[in-house]
Length: 382
Image 1 (cartoon, helix red, strand yellow):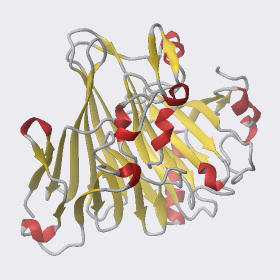
Image 2: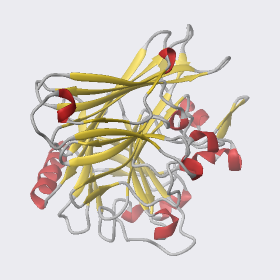
Image 3: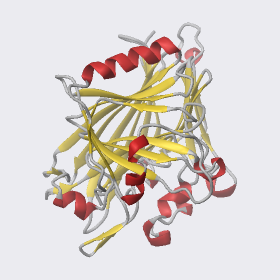
Image 4: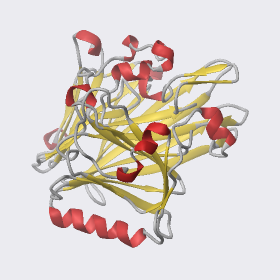
């Protein structure tokens, strides 16, 4: 089957396809059950939000060009990729003020399966010198200025979505995210291939974090987080209270529960590749996150075992640093810098385990990466 390409958004040349569909018939290919469909939502706070629905014949997921080219939700068989946020709509950025509630406005639209955090910053709200930084940065609420959808027939058929998103301001950051999301036809995985480029003439600090979020059915009483961990530490006093069960899940708690955040580094193979797994309560299903510790050396586990209606969710989060206030990360030597014109690249693969044997195989890969016993720090980092 031949290759195919369609530019659906190009701000520079005035291209904007609000509604568009692609399937094998559109490119003269053989019969197949994959498809790509672009729609524009209406009503409420989702008015004007553009969404691309991807179905590779096995796995379905939705990409949001209006919001940082994130992934709102996914589904493969009876495995749900995503969670139930109190925020039900895919809120358009025009309705978001990141500075609300002391810099917590990011949460007013938070409900996606995968959001990229960054690029200038991606940690807790804080004041860094004279600069006020909001939660998780701005990239998740910036629209793509260029979007291309591709079908590549060789060497193995796959669907590829590419986008360009700029985080630029006068006397501020000049950073560009070139985002790529791809999936093989009939494959149970999604791959991110991203680059961040300094468009300015001076060195610039940057941060990026993949906020990958799961709820039921993968998350529940008895779920486990499994990874080849070098060391783990509680972010704060609240997390330190739960350090004995930091990688276990007890199910939704009662009112008054507050989140637990654990900061860690992972072992990897000789090429720097590592993998982290969320295992379902019955061990029959799971989802893993594969990445390079050379690109994303730090990992955060976010546990929010709040009541279901309050957002029962856990986040697996590989990153360039920890999501602590930026001055704290700078002082710890975890804040990377790009020289003028330099680019940083990262690759993340999210893979669904559809049965017990696939879960067991993933656990074995992780076990083989564990070189030494995990070092557990009991005192808070902050």
